[in-house]
Every structure is written in C-alpha cells, then in structure tokens.
Image 1 (cartoon, rainbow, N blue to C red):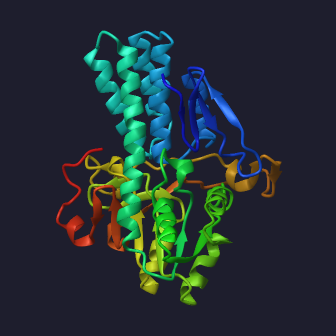
Image 2 (cartoon, rainbow, N blue to C red):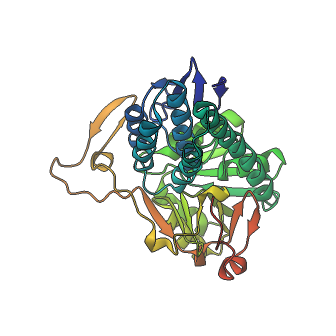
Image 3 (spheres, one colour):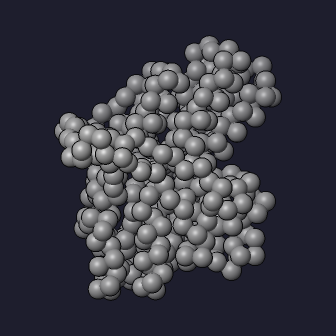
Amino acid sequence: MQTLSTTSLQVRDNQLWILDQQALPQQKNWCPTPDVASLVGHIKALRVRGAPLIGLSASLLLALLAENGLPKTELAAALEVLRAARPTAVNLMNNLDRMKQVLAQAPDNLAVALSREALRLVEEDKALCDRIAAAGAALIEPGSRLLTHCNTGGLATAGVGTALGVIARGWQQGNVENVWVDETRPLLQGGRLTAWELGELGVPYQLICDSMAASLMAQRQVDAIWVGADRIAANGDVANKIGTYSLAVLAHYHRIPFYVAAPHTTLDSSCPEGNAIPIEQRATSEVTGVAGSFGDVQWAPENARVYNPAFDVTPAALISGWVLDTGVVTPAQVAAGAFYGRRG
C-alpha cells in the first residue's frame, strides 16, 4: 500500500501506525498496529477514537493484512472481530461493510482491491469533512461565540474534522470570536485534544469544566453549540459523547441553536430511534480516578460503584439542524423522513 499520512493515522513500511490520543497533548507517540488484537486494544483504550477514524483504521488494517498474505477466510474473521470493537459508532460498521463487499466479490488480486477500497474511504472522508465545513460555516454569524463538546477535529477524522472543522472554517472566514471548550469528562477529550487542536489552528478558545456551560448560557455568552455524532438514527436522534444531551437541554431552555455535524456515514436508517442505539459501558476506573501520560491517580473509594456510559442520546426535537456532507437538514425535513432509506 502507498504511504499515507493524516493527523492521527500513518501507513509506512507496509504497517499501520496510530497516534496515541491518550498521550496527547504532552506526548506525541506513534503506536505500531500490526494485527487485529493491537488495533482492538487501541480502540478500547481510546488511543484511536472518533467515529470516522475508527472505521478508517479498521479498513486500512484489513487491507494491510491482505497485502501481508492473510488468507481470505482469516480476513473475514478479522473483519468481524473489528466490527465488535466499538458498538455505538456506526462508521466502523459502514466502512467494514464496504470492505466486506470487496471480500465477497473475491477478485483475483484481493489485496490490491482491498487496498484501493480502504484508500478510497480515506479520500472520501477528507472530501466529506470539507463539504461539512462549508455547509456548517454558512450558519456561523459574525462575532459568534461557540461551544463544543468532546473532540471532532482532524484527530477524529482523515480530514479537517466535523464540528471542529466547521468552527475552524468559520474562524478562517472571520466569523468566530471565541470557542468555549468543554473539558468532556471523564476522559477529557475536550481539555486534552480539542484545546490542543484549536491552539494549533490559532483559533481563540477558553477551556471550561462541563458544569460551567449552563452558567455561560445564562450570561448570554454562547451563540451556538456545535457537536459531532457517533450514530444518527432514522428519526434524527443522535448518539454522541456523554454530556451532549445535557447541552442540548440547556440550549433548548436558553433558546440557543444546537447543531450536529457529521458525515452521511454516521446515518443509520436501520436504527429507528435513539433508544435502539447500543450504548457502550466503559471501565469504572475512568470515573474513580484519572490516567494519562502523567500516570494514574485514584480519588474515589476502592469499592465505589460506578455508572459510566460512553455516550448519551439527544432527541431530534432538541436539534436545530444536522449538518451533513450533503448539506443542512432541517427539523422539518427530518420530521418528514429525510433520513429514511439512506445508508452510509
């Protein structure tokens, strides 16, 4: 496979390398990913994260395994193991469905066909991000003070990102005054990753604790909220990083626009509503303490019981618009069934 480099993925020396997002921003470590077990480990530890990026990394690894001589039957088994690595993010399933179609066609040179498809998915993601950024930036008014949650930039995609790509484009057009960055507990993807990306881009931002968002809205310091998505149900309900639903409720009360930016590969028309989206439960240690490049700290009692869902679901009724690579979808369009019949 040809050499490939994005913010968080590299293919070199015929091997996949993952930027360890758990070590950022203090360290920039690239992790070798030679097999399925290593990638599953990276996904579960959130060294690789972001719905689009997870799907792309799985597709690239399959192609590389084929180039390294893994038989078709073992490739098919590897695909299913990867599919189960992250249950909520539908991009993983959609990308692997594309790779599975190539496997099923059994071309003479399977490795070449899989590599072409994986690289095509990467290029498509870059283009999707650009179109999302253009569509979303048109909604950002001059002097906007925006609030975002989790991380939705180049670290989470092959391109400029989804919601963060929109914000960056709005800044480039001179319409963003400030970005409020939720720290995004418990793993601090906002505090560690989004703050770092905005700083690298030169976008003015201020980092806040998640519990401070309501106070800012009450003071009329937030003009719009932009978030990403890990899965969008057919009725427009959105699964995203835990804490997104809280922001949507607050935005509704304070009459602040709440936008979801995502590629069409995040749509799941086979999922009728948010209640049908599987929600990943994560380790108790993420809540009872903190771990990172600095080491491990435990602050809760050793026997503390923990509830730690990775995502929550925001009902479509609380969303002002879904900004896709195909354009902006309005609540009226969603109510009329705009998402039905569409699969990534």
